[in-house]
Image (cartoon, rainbow, N blue to C red):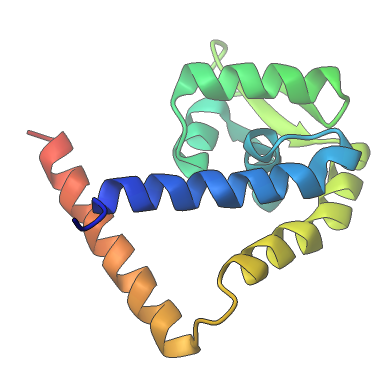
Length: 142
């Protein structure tokens, strides 16, 4: 019997996340927190809604992660000058330094996970996964 594609995608995600968790452990940050901090450092001054979209997380999850990052001193929130209900998120110097130290760890985890696949296979994988995402998004709107 063939293994369902959803199971394989889920198992692959879990395995890569476990590898990244192990490599980030000494830096006291989870892959989930890392992905949000990465987006903050990538585009400083985003609001929570924009961050949630860029990190592909829902807003309550993003809020929880931002609270954790704030407690660790990796980000700070400032009131939005254009919307008094919103705040803008900025990376602190500590957050930026952590990102500089950990980007190579994340890159190596991904590189290790695709070992044995050539450039053509990786390009095809990206295309196929992108098409699957677009398909699901089309049905989510219905």
